[in-house]
Every structure is written in C-alpha cells, then in structure tokens.
Image (cartoon, rainbow, N blue to C red; front, side, top):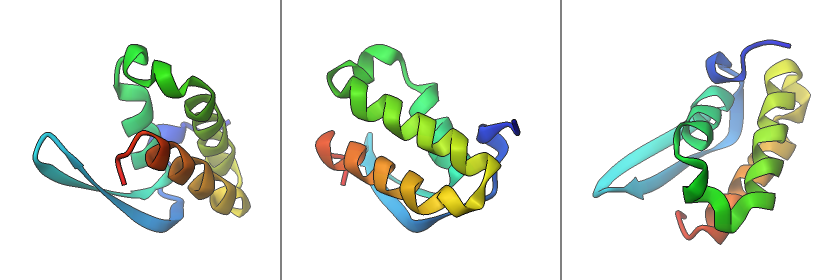
Length: 85
C-alpha cells in the first residue's frame, strides 16, 4: 500500500473550505488525507462514520486512481455534514 498522505492522485473536484478565516484548497487524495488525519479525532467525533468512510476511500484511491470518484464523494459527504462546504 502506498502512503496516502503523499498521493498526488487528483480528486474529481477541488474543495475550497474556510478554516480559521483562511481559504484552504484541497485538490488531491494526499491533501484530503492529511487534512482528515491531522486533526484531533475529537474534532471528527460527531461525524465518526463519515470520517472513517472518507479516510478508507482516500486510502483506496491512493492505491487505485479509479477510486478517486468514490473518495471525492466520501469527502464531500463529510464536508457537507460538517458544514465546511
């Protein structure tokens, strides 16, 4: 398995989210994986199931670019639920 945090596999869209007053663009599997895994697990506790699904989908997409659509959809579902989009 390749390292998901260093994956350059593009997501199907670029997510632009506002965090602490700054706009953050997330365009690759690696960027999304780093964003989702660098925050304290308590921050994602409310969205635990969606967070786990998104991380698993990103790990799959890091190994197989054909899974980028599913990873994008999983990240989108999490971001929408967390009101980041």
